[in-house]
Length: 475
Image (cartoon, rainbow, N blue to C red):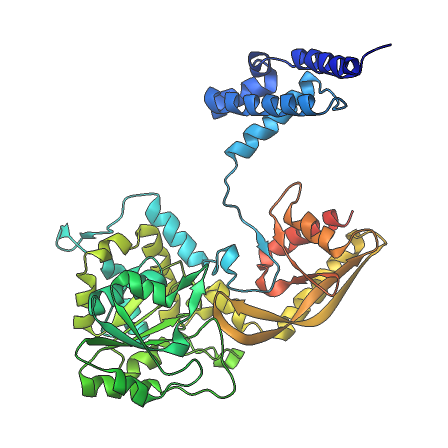
């Protein structure tokens, strides 16, 4: 009678035999397709990929006696796929069909054609980044954007750092390091990914002095908190949330007047960076120019939110104040490179010319719902013949949002393309679009068990590709 250990020994023997049948690394490297990749990708990277594929197969064969063996051709194909995956860039273009215009996870504001052209022109060659062509001497990189920023913001001067959190840090570190900064308790916001205003203030060396309550702060609360250690009055625009109901806060003019009486600068962090009046499109955000006109000493805001440009933090205000901030040694650590300057400069030129629709995010915000509806109807009409019989496509009324920590309670009326299938669930369709066999991933959303596409955030030249991806997902 066989012992209980005999079946296990037999399985181990079979697994060992199958492992011995696996080809060697050198054998796979000698295959035609792999040899061709060695020429273009380099032997080291291809060897790493082959070893990875073989190691995975060994682990699977050891752990499962029923694991089917692969032919040498199959292993070669897997190695080719692995090499291509290793060579593919991690950062990829996606089609944003969510209707969220400034989608933080999808890179916020897409750049204008003019900005892309300017970046391509400048970064592929040498440039006068810090060279004064007129004098033949060293210049400053600030000059390429400072004048336009100051003009558009209604300020005397402006500088640029790598994002608005850096701008806030730099202003606080320069004007209030080791001293108190008075701020309303209701403005101590979290700006995203766990970064909070109090934390930034602490790292800057400034001492937080909270006044008022979460929902109500009065000008006398600021006034009573001023002492010999106070160096700055801070106002933070709550661009990523809204409070309603029993609320109160002093006007910016009141705060500026208090700063003048107490001989203290007033710093406003606007966050969203609205340079153009978007009220006709239903977007009520404070304008940078209005803050400067009200007399704030310095204001900061983002470049890649409502401004519609590259990631940047902009500091604008009085000439002496901005120059003082610029002289901070941390400015060099936080300054921007030529790519940002090129893209920002081109974006600002569109503002100067009044050509707001050249800036994709502003064009999306300003597009009427009726125009989106016409695009959606045309898209659905072109899509229907390519769909299987079990799929239905409808155009419905809906809402887009601006996103990016801006205008949290404001929605833009839109029309969405709603898709259902008896063969695939909405979550399956969403995943298929997000992980296509070929082409750019499509990021959509689900509502009421339907796949929803909002063309407000789909660029016109992406519609044909989107239609093909949807048809493929529904098969």
